Image 1 (cartoon, rainbow, N blue to C red):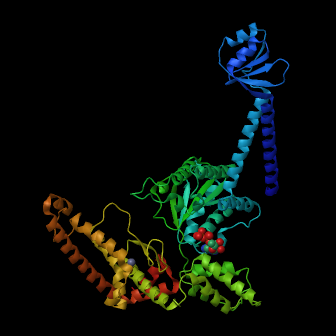
Image 2 (cartoon, protein in one colour):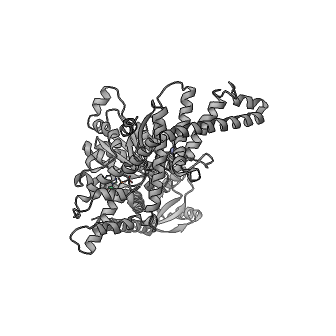
Image 3 (tube, protein in one colour):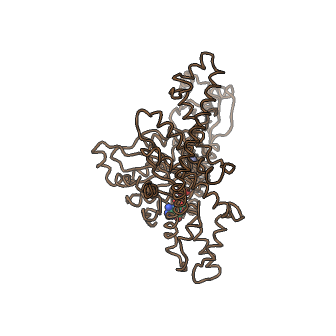
Length: 586
Ligand code: ADP
Ligand code: ZN
């Protein structure tokens, strides 16, 4: 179809070219040769000239009596020439307007160049197959593709909850605008690759029953200046034509990475594309049902301009699934496969720690391929076992399960330490989740420890916060020994130190150093003493808090063990789980 059209267009181009050259030739043929102005004047005197064509061009055309065709003469552009000729009874034609022939010639030239331009552009567009393919797929997806719903996305319950209102908004934007409520124009999903960010965006479109437009930030890299921006405008135009839509931009970091401080101006094209995106987003009407969702593996590398209110101001983490999540994902992808009923997906879920949803899907797919290869009736346990190594082949060939187990145990105790200290001394803090699945924010698992939102923090609360930070390292020490503590606490130590520094230097909370602002003292030339004093005091305080917390955890070792065990079993615990574990025996 496309090929045929190209052939027709090439034919048109060739015909146009022939006609153009033909016309030029005819024109040329009419003109015989050039004569000098003096010769021309001479011929006038000899009364041999029949007709002269005057014009604004650089040459005049002269016709002689009894001859066909014209001769060219230098045009003196002399206003009295016409009179001279007329007096001599020579007919004069003025050629100030374009002859039909020259008009046709002009049109032909324009047509030819437009055609050439169009062709080059088309050829160049072909070099970006990813983008156009995405658009084409999307167009067809609207009609025939299976609609993705929330039940196709397993796990990620928090994320689902966080986007429920978005679905409602797309369906009834008027409802929200009536109350003056401003829905987030842009949502960012962030988390490791293959965790279902795209899937979730599709599900939002599916649930709301609106078309889904997808592009990837990396498609815009290395384009000519201005092209990316115009594509963004096209994309939004398309979405607007549908009235309601979900626009998905994968790998937004390719467009919206933080500009380096020392950077040399950065990338013009990228900036223009990004600006076009932000402009389009701010151009939405409140009552419009268009939502832009972007995905990235890392939120921290994005330019702040993107994250400002009114832009991508809702950030939703989509993390690696825990054991229950993995089981659910496996269930979804096992549905259309002949799995031996004896295979326990729960067991598979347990063995696939740190697997993403995409890896799990891949695992079952590889197993199915193995079963097909050996023409087996069903997928057997051996197939899954073998596929397991194919899927993690990228990582390391050697059996890592032993190492993994040890890592898991360390993480479990570390996180249990943070959680238990919180429960024991800072119960007003919310522990929304404790998990041993690594998040994008930290290396190991992390426990969300949200202090109550208030204006002032007391001295005691600051100490407690530092103790919570220390809890992870202390748990490691108690369980595995002082020589076995790990690098996992680096972030905790950083935060604890920073807090303690303020405690001493800024808030005058240390009895030893008194109510003094150490920064000001350092400014008036006491730098050396201040540094020495602050260092000594911080060290003393930290050791004191460490010992205090250590005793607390030793006294409550029973709870530490039970939280850690439960974490190893379930991988993530809610606040409720935690309360139950700690209060049963309190
Ligand atoms: P991301 O956009 O986060 O890189 P995708 O959404 O592209 O990940 O996920 C790739 C595939 O992995 C999906 O098409 C789906 O088959 C599978 N998958 C990932 N996460 C899930 C999940 N939570 N539930 C079901 N399938 C998932
Ligand atoms: Zn920690």
